[in-house]
Image 1 (cartoon, rainbow, N blue to C red):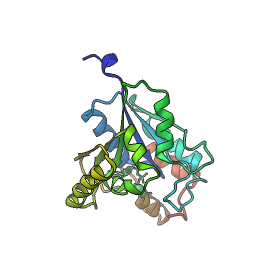
Image 2: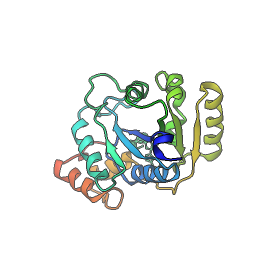
Image 3: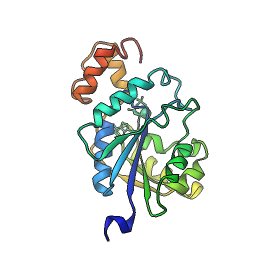
Length: 210
Ligand code: ATP
Ligand code: MG
């Protein structure tokens, strides 16, 4: 079947990206190739419902870091859709908006790590979101595989969610750890792209913020 006949296969990678790191990039690239996706759109969250930190104030920086990090991958793009809105970002609203510009034959793959998907039933209007996307949930260091599997089964039953579980190489990298390292003057080299590392130092990000 050719691409036009099967519709586009689009990956969505949501996150704070505060900062973006190799855990995000490797996850996206693994899923892109495993699922033969035509592209992946990185959508940095604007104002997050679940996070108490200063995501709003770092909107511009998070956008720039994401753009720098994906520059070398022609299949990756970044959207400022959530960043430019003043309201709390809800995935269901972003995806509903995105679907309007797509054909019915196009499919959306919402990529997450295990820690994010296990909270799906607490997401705003998660049942509606499940109608629009297939979730691809990847293992992440620190998350128990058996618990992950039984949670996915429960979400499937409760929300009729289409969730595919994926095993990817384990990278125990998190944005929280990177912020802590910067604030403590520790090295972050090889945890994220050099361009993003340079940007963090140039702008003085995370010096006293964890
Ligand atoms: P923070 O520590 O601030 O929560 P984070 O490293 O978890 O940051 P997010 O921006 O919260 O990054 O994550 C965006 C998405 O990427 C989530 O679905 C998350 O599960 C996934 N993700 C982040 N890091 C990894 C990793 N190392 N391995 C697998 N998935 C990851
Ligand atoms: Mg996180």
